[in-house]
Image (cartoon, rainbow, N blue to C red):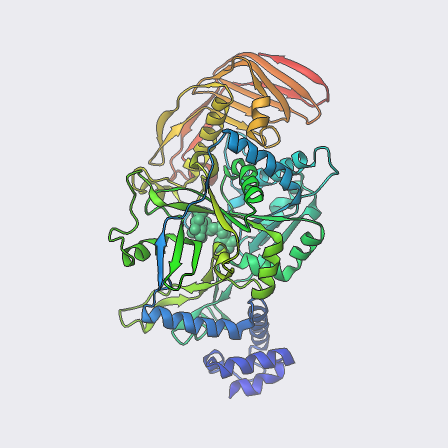
Length: 598
Ligand code: UGB
């Protein structure tokens, strides 16, 4: 064959791989290759790609092909992955922001953060959002322009500092999973911003590789339509994070350093860190090996449902059922209406927000057995009902929240339900799709994501004793949202509810049209009324007490049409911008103790 003539291009390792492929029905990959001397560099690049695909999958390419054949056969046969399982609504811990229980969990969580590591999965391109850049570079809100990644890092640093109080200085490790789509730009964003204040050695980037596409039910690997010397690849999903953490060896390093918790989170949730201290407190108090964060879920919302699955053989587990699988599962198991709201107006199944807290010890033990492999699935789009050919190539995928599926029944798997307003506001949908979301369901757009931050901060200050004006309803990019006063603060100012309460006193109020940005750490708000815009900025060593009455024209909100190409994309996707007409600025760059009276 033409490959035979080309085989002197191969290293011994590549030789073995090619033999395995030929033994596994993949000879089409080398069909009609020209003889040696033609396209040799491209052929070598092809073999290099094979080695990469082989080394980045637990068990190698052979395992990938075998797993694919099995899953494709199941899919063709219409086998139900939940066969034998009956779904029911599980019970978990429910947290109410600011109550006694919550405050107790927050205290515990802050203490435990000394022994925590954080893992951000940020390899996804965010196709639903259709934004040109990487999602973690987007501003979470445009009052201060703080980017998601910056906010995450500042939150981790605030936790680090709070949990070190009275103890030796600690550095919380931070891993970011990237992919070829996001790696370069993530690294660049960190470097050009001095890692947003984090020590560069604290941050580890782990890049996930894509997996080979499959062109038919025999799991023949698909060649790139543009290049016969490349296998077409697609993302394998966020579940890769487990095998990457395992193979990098970093978990052992953490274990040896005495760490106990690994917290996983996603790329665009500007509220998450308001829920992290208490959720970690729950993990620690309840000794959960796995704790998933959840919020009340609207039927058909694109978030998975946390479900108890009980098998006819007695096995039972609490696990995420992905949003596209929940409806068919329910219909097949005695709920003829499928995924619908109950009389509460919500789905009876809590919504998975994919923020997981794992206890490190049991996690390492489990990965030692599985190598980090996560149960996969395949989702081919068939040409017709015969299910013999695909409309386009497919691939295996896996999800990080499926980690508990291989755990023994003795594992302590729990979940914690938070109120949505302080825990979950992702930025996933583009303006057009968000505008089409059924009324009453969340938009999950840049518009709603930003407005949710102002709403949460307003509600929290209200709980802390502030008089906060009611919101007005306004539509941006076809989405009606509550517009609250634009209140923002740095994580180091308001890491926990107790901390926030300790910084607000007397008679304080803010009007709906106002902006209040707290950019320092030791800023005490006392007898302050804001009607307009107030920006307080102070270096960490400085203590400022702010009071008096702020009255100015403030920052007005102006609509931006998402189709208006003259506006920057980050503004277009949210549908508004601020016109900074007038503001009061209190700025302190020297250490000391100050009083600011407006
Ligand atoms: N991601 C990767 O890092 N690598 C990949 O290959 C793919 C994604 P999406 P999805 O909480 O709102 C999830 O696309 O997958 C990262 C849960 O499965 O935003 O549709 C990516 O960068 C679902 O149960 O979400 O749905 C991002 O940070 C529900 O909980 C993250 O993975 C839903 O999120 C999620 O990717 C939710």
